[in-house]
Amino acid sequence: MHPVDAAVAAVRLVDHHVHGALRDTPDRAGLEGMLTESDRPVPPWMTMFDSPLGLAIRRWCAPLLDLEPAAPADEYVARRSELGEAEVTRRMLRASGVERYLVETGYAAGAVLGPDEMAAAAGTSASEIVRLESVFEQLATDVGAAAAVRTFPEVLAERTATAAGLKSVVAYRFGFDFAPDPPAPAEAVAAAGAMLATAGPAGPRVADPTLLRFLLWSGVDRGLPLQLHCGYGDPDLDLHRCDPLLLTGFLRLVEPRGVDVLLLHCYPYHRHAGYLAQVFPHVYFDVGLAVNHTGLGSAGVVAESLELAPFAKILFSSDAYGPAELHYLGAHLWRRGLGRVLGAWVDEGAATAADAERIVTLIGRDNALRVYGPGCAAH
Image 1 (spheres, rainbow, N blue to C red):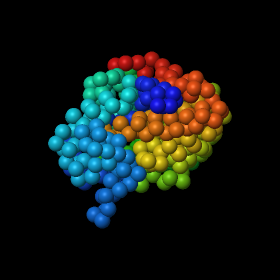
Image 2 (tube, rainbow, N blue to C red; image 1 turned 90 degrees about the horizontal axis):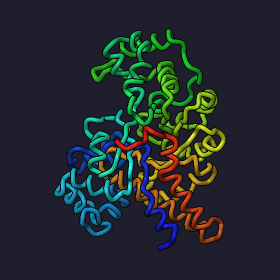
Image 3 (cartoon, helix red, strand yellow; image 1 turned 135 degrees about the horizontal axis):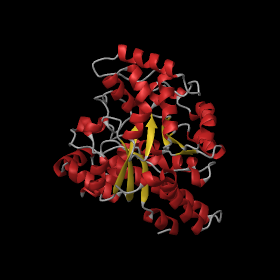
Image 4 (cartoon, one colour; image 1 turned 180 degrees about the vertical axis):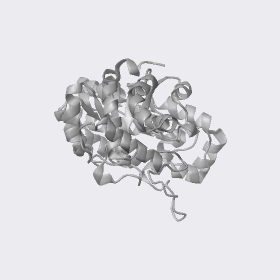
């Protein structure tokens, strides 16, 4: 084994942005639907096991279920159903080498494990990342527009008393081409009122850019690390409006406030995120979601993430939601890609083995521990 591979395998990771693993065992259609960012049904003439992620699952997850590498899809699905979701989750999480999960709970949380349950299944620790939009939508439903805007900072402080950080999905709800400065309270109240007046059976949904700006700046005022989804996601977003370079004005205004901003996933704009992480001291990024979904080609994405930004500004994440295969592969594919890049640097004399080990530890865990501080502590 290459010395770099040994260092990469040994690091105990902090997954700084992740969601829960499934509670119940899905049927094949349900499983395949969670192997894509599309929210449309998988067409009957294809299978998601014939994809970069699908091949990676069959290659590297099958042995964890006592199957041969690259087991046929039918055999794989039957075996995970036989074992049951709890056992699949236990095996995948414990094989990932993750020591701490920072679990974002704002998306379809009822179908997946919460932070404490993730910690129990993995035999590790976990903390919560709180989604700004979810807190405000519930608050506005309960107390109305004016009271929600007036009391949101206090409610957010209570809701995040033990949280590691905050997250916004402004990229999904509007895009990053919003006015960077905070809105006036009256503007936020008017936008919240319009949101409640047009709410459907599923409840209100924050989508107005004025209201989204209010939430972002309330998050900045709270002072916790602020995560922002960037780039690649499901068809609910307009990808061209999710380029993190569009956040430049907002990032300039946030900088004097001393709040760290974490750009999540970023693909195909991860090079843009690397630039922002280089030039702004409070900006960090990862390539989490892209590593899983590029599967066998993920080493290239990992390599591109190392092109420009200082290594102290890059974090590891999986952004896994649902099947625990995503939690395992997020870590495994990241290790595989990083080992290839750093091993080549060492072999050509561009870096020492000690350099490589330091880089692995920085990105894999130490940067997250520094950024999230006490919020990253074991629960």
